[in-house]
Length: 107
Length: 107
DNA sequence: CAATTATATGAACTATTATTCATATAAACG
DNA sequence: CGTTTATATGAATAATAGTTCATATAATTG
Image (cartoon, rainbow over the protein chains, first blue to last red):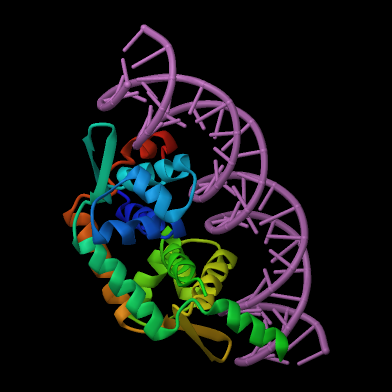
């Protein structure tokens, strides 16, 4: 079975700005859709779509309480992974490609 | 500057099956384009395109030796990150949701 | 029950990304 | 030199993913 495809899908699922923001908020605490929508100032349906994508990759789980649906990280270590990734990226100055391109063009 | 966008870009760059395979090979040792092409059994131009994407995110660096160009990971901790991610994903049974999609694709 | 609130969904559209193909460059070698 | 080998590149196309809009569902409240 293509494990590599699963891993790639997992990384791509995290690698979308809005979803990454959602995950960082959920790393702090469980949150419902409406709160996420207001915090991120995006359309509610967009947040729902992204939450579904995250759920389909088992990155988040949901819990309904009355009308509201609360989402949280499936595992706290996901927060650690994101932090590690961010730290490594910053430390190594990764993804500075735009700037490199500017320099190259300027030469 | 939108750090979150950089981080998302970084994750997406890693989150592509062929690039992930390339990275796993480079985690073992430095390799030139031709060897990567043969090992992965893909078109040479495709491998070059992916290597460029990785280079633009500072994930790999190149070194020319004669006609050949050798690529390696910018930092060994990248290998660790990939391993951690894979381990966590497997342990949590993440991304097992897409089995139906595999059937659909039939690859 | 009707109205309101919270969330989800699907279709259409748009944007981004991956892949192929043809070709370019550049080193090595006879 | 001309030829072969190794790699890169750009344009065109194909595939995938993100966003919006309209609407659906379902819980809550008066």
